[in-house]
Length: 223
Image (cartoon, rainbow, N blue to C red; front, top):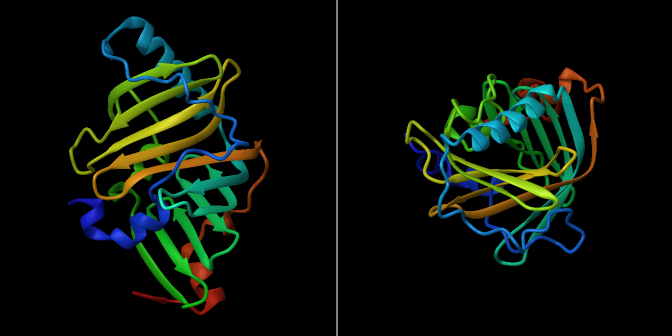
């Protein structure tokens, strides 16, 4: 079952095509080129990926701001909250849309239309980020690892073949911090979701990640 076939509208709103990052981005991708000799079984590659795995597993919560840009020039900003391992909330500044992952499902809530659309997290690219047992070596098909002076980029695909596309996590270097992620496939285009003003370890209320609570408060109806 393909994510894009299930809910293309939800796919676009959570992961829409992007243009180059805004000038205030912390990520410099100018010198990043695909590796022609990538070997996921290389000991140095595995050591670096395990380092990234360990960092992500050490995260308890992350919150802050984000910039999401589109190929058409549209740029969205907002606030995000991530409570590891599998709860996420994305609030947009200038649209009535709200994205919530509650550990099982991920929902798009339109506060203006009072509607809720939701699908399983495992049917979306967020399955890589929100995995309960986060492991880029075992939980996905590792297809690329690049490192520049100030960032590392690790790219995976769905090893089960149910999702078409590449998911890339971006980390600051040499002191590891999560900077964002990208998603690229033929259906949804290419995405860049970059984080800023990030706070790690801040206590987050569990109510932020309850889809039914949002439905009750907004009077929303499911579709």
